[in-house]
Length: 224
Ligand SMILES: *Cc1c(COP(=O)(O)O)cnc(C)c1O
Image (cartoon, rainbow, N blue to C red):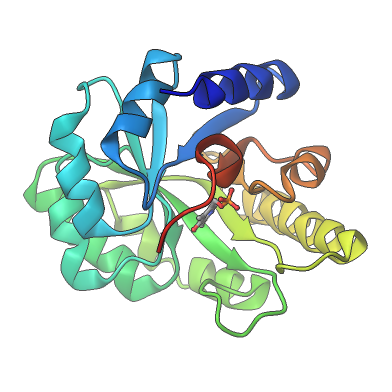
């Protein structure tokens, strides 16, 4: 097998600031590639489809941290609640309610990020800054005892215009700071900003990302 994966992980670890965590996005890639990354020291893996994730989990060592990064349908929450470490993609109050409900049934507390829509594409999920603050203002989330609020996640527009991307990441950071100040000042876990993918992670880091989600740079192109 090629050494591409371990070499790239090594290079990334040298490049990323110590406080930025790397989520290796392994969606659509075969288990052998995940094992190669694991053997190179990678422990956090990101997947975006429930079916694929639940098939991969039993094939990997138990100290892997699984992160869910894709759009999550409510009727599939139950399948990932037993093992998931972090859900990056909470994009509605209804989804949050279902995670709370399933987490309570499973007697777990689930760490979650709220997904912020800052990109120009209409197709992407998430709260706008306004709908995020409206939701937080409603106070319902306060009563969710099985959810640990850990911060925000966002995706930038898929564009070559780096100033556009930078603006979007900057808005995400400002929104994070405002949410922290207004609603999560007494929540130490609310400290993560998940942003940056293969093509834009250096910009994301310079705008304050604490987690980057990198797939194709590590594993190569995906075969859909
Ligand atoms: C696929 C995906 C990534 C990784 O994308 P790459 O361009 O391959 O690095 C990151 N975040 C989310 C939400 C994704 O769906």
